Length: 299
Image 1 (cartoon, rainbow, N blue to C red):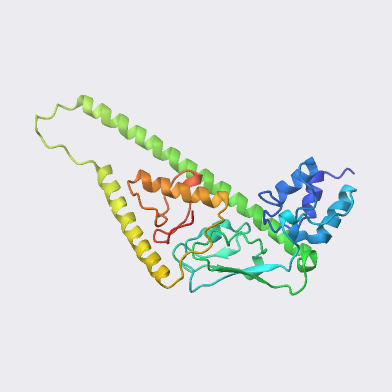
Image 2: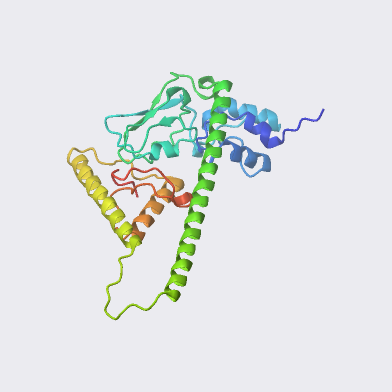
């Protein structure tokens, strides 16, 4: 019987599934496909270590070569630990985790589920208050000696479930946005028809205030108050020497979320960039859970 698995499938089966992106690809699967297509080398996975390279070399009929230092080094497996006294509940670390190993709600303390963490490091750069440490938990064991096939299979399943969840959320956000556009168009058409049938207002007669203007003004006031609270929190942290530190490295995905939030604030007429606004029903790039009174996300 012919094995239905493709070469990319077989390569992916040999990867540790940490989904760390150190290979230069968004996840283990895209890296496996790139190796199969010949556009990536098979020595770009530091979590797999030397044994991982040997496994891939055996499958591909190629020589064993060292890990490419550009992609990192083989090391003991770390685990993310959040300092819960500093965490401000911005949700950026949870959004960055590729296997949903971080739990917590907006404006609430977050924590890492130890058994689920793959040690990918992806939660560290987005943290605006530098409250996440990566602590080695496997002693001197590195690569596949620090990771089991069962752990890899479980991480792969969680990553696939996360991708499916994000796709559902994207589709739901697009559906909500489409419904709003349709509702707005219907309201505009109804207003136009009513104005055609209604008698002209007497000169100088007062016009009714638009409900939408009231709603927008209220929304701006709420968000501005949140920004003021965030600014005060930022100043307090800075005075204690605990302001954001790791502001030099932000992933493209997180930067897109930050830019989308700032675009929403500009649409609302709020110029400050001091805090993330409350969640708004927008298409996917705008749909995130950042807390309204979080301190400034990094640029």
